[in-house]
Image (cartoon, rainbow, N blue to C red; front, side, top):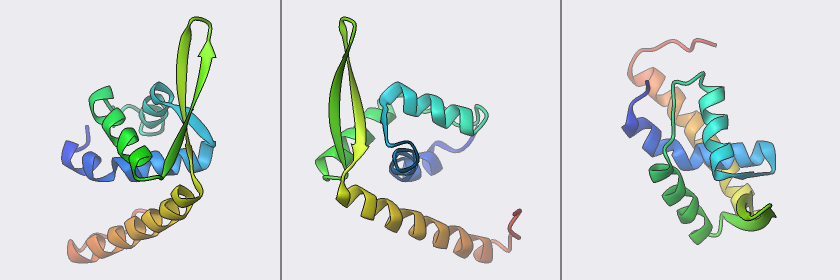
Length: 111
């Protein structure tokens, strides 16, 4: 299991990247994708996911779309134009950060 502090610091970037790759997703779908991609190493709770999603909506990075599924309403999230630009910036920033940390900690890339 990965450090909660590391996950908390990267959750918005993870969400933005998933939406960049998948177009639109709803909350549970996002948690399941993260769990599947990380082979169960990272499990995101509703208590951390939804505040991050609501923050991204408030920042203008995401828009929502409500869809009726039977008697339930499912809220989908999708990147805005600003969100697409910010996703690219965050991914570049994170990639640069990884390279810098590898240098600081004398770690060799595993790629």
